[in-house]
Length: 202
Image 1 (cartoon, rainbow, N blue to C red):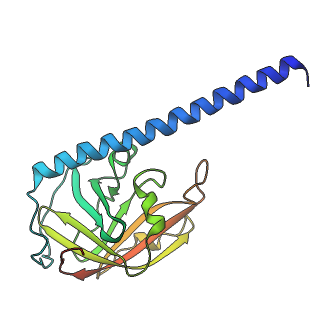
Image 2: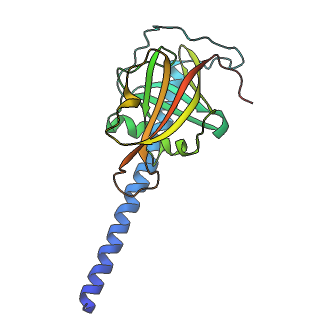
Image 3: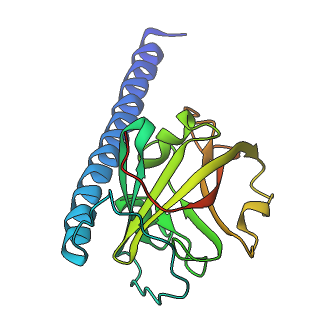
């Protein structure tokens, strides 16, 4: 390889690295700004209830949220995690935060509540979840406790986590592997079931 070709290749590699760094920084900062905006919007929609007071699920609460607006606060006590969930799962919505799949059950209702998120920003925390962990979804209508039943890695063609259910379930979905470069070939799913009332996290 000539000296000129070596220099050209070096420039291309540096330029490629700079582009990847820029895209990564943009996604990271965009996710932080999006969550900050979603948190502020959520606080405007609801006053924080006293977490020491248990709240039982109420069916058919008719919680209506426009696409892109903040739907719920998602908390994972063991991992000290708080995320704000928006309505919808389009590119714009998922830049703000994890997105509630429109048409799936609302938090606390009977049926399958489905929330998707990016593995390289908001939902990277899912890799540390395990069976038995608690997940709390807070909405203007109350707080609802889900308990993780299992985690799994599936093909994108596997639609089982998207199915309708009669019991109150929660499925959190992201791409997998978590540190894969490019479009990840599989999906990571956290399946949880409604456990009832909410107690103060210890």
